[in-house]
Image 1: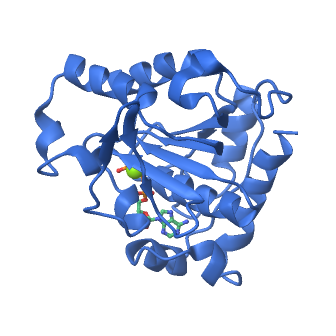
Image 2: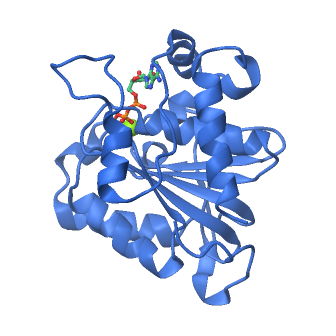
Amino acid sequence: MSDPNSGHCHFPERGNLARVGHILLVLSGKGGVGKSTVSTELALALRHAGKKVGILDVDLCGPSIPQMLKVQGKGVHQCDSGWVPVFVDQDKSISLMSIGFLLEKPDDAVVWRGPKKNALIKQFISDVTWGDLDFLIVDTPPGTSDEHISTVESLRPYKPLGAVLVTTPQECTNLFSKGGGEELARHAGVPFLGCVPLDPQLTQSLEEGRDFIQEFPKSSAFPALAHIAQQILDRTF
Ligand SMILES: Nc1ncnc2c1ncn2[C@@H]1O[C@H](COP(=O)(O)OP(=O)(O)OP(=O)(O)O)[C@@H](O)[C@H]1O
Ligand SMILES: [Mg+2]
């Protein structure tokens, strides 16, 4: 986490990201570990804390956030300064831009070569008209591919607050073993934000595009997600 004092400065040279307070990346080494879940729930938790949040879904081959927020199939509009993101709620506190909104067929991007993907990601990062945001959460595809390099390079000038690395306990040993993420964080010398338990209510709420943070405060994953969001908030002041 860098520059805890960056606050809500206005940087005209940042273009469409001029009024974005903090940028957070969500990354993982492997697929299916819960990046899009963490991105979605962090957005909902930060909204719950009164923040305006944008989500940029750069997972070109498997965009899943539109479904998790129940806005799949929505069209995006273009204006003079770029693409207008999709608002998830009436009071426009969460906005989303996903490649899923731009592809005619969901499988289109699967066959694209690196340079086409990289160009799209660069455009994606500079051309979405976010307006005023407290946080922009960037959900990435699994692994460390060309898309990650383009994403990180394109975001570097905007000085992201940090990255949330999502991991699961080592496969094949014990799915429910704990401590792997904490150990990894210690090893890498980065803050350990928390451990989200497997929670069927969370799965269900994501499948149905519901607001888990609002509707399931008593479920097992709730305190973990709220704690992670709070630690991120704590690092911005
Ligand atoms: N803590 C949890 N409890 C229960 N289900 C979960 C939890 N975290 C994630 N899931 C479920 O696991 C599946 C994979 O999660 P998700 O799509 O967030 O992973 P991902 O890392 O974004 O995957 P990909 O690498 O394909 O983008 C989803 O069906 C989601 O509902
Ligand atoms: Mg995902």
